[in-house]
Length: 213
Picture 1 (cartoon, rainbow, N blue to C red):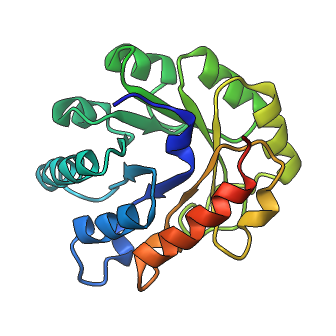
Picture 2 (picture 1 turned 135 degrees about the vertical axis):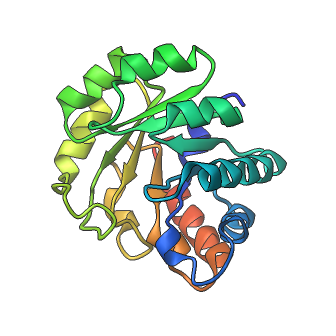
């Protein structure tokens, strides 16, 4: 699937801790119905067989909604299921190596916590940057918060789109206005809510007001 900046508007990142007995695919479909524009399958503690099955299920689901599916960290699995791309962190595979493995047509996202990391990722073939954590978050408790000014500098200094991540919800998303981001990546603000579809609809409307044109 061809990547464009609008895919980053409302970037849904899965979190198994919020399933509450529901199938993951059901939660993801609710988010897609509400307007999620990209889905990242993030599984840190699932065995490979189940991870593979889940990835295939979400790939079929995302295809129906014409939304890219990104696999977190695992380049091999992304290639095996023919996902649309991979997102790698600073502690994962080097962006240059990931790009080499993926080839030119897959989407590559890279986490960046400062301008230096952002510029390196861009030079090594990243299509977009995930910058954060912009607010305190339980999902990544070991990540130092990224200030608004630092986020804005990353957006100004790079030529690829930036999506903000970390602790973003309806009560603080508007604080990111004017930073230059092209979208927001959310976890609990979608999947910890009783109605992910309604949560996605609300967050998308807010994101549309604050992202750069």
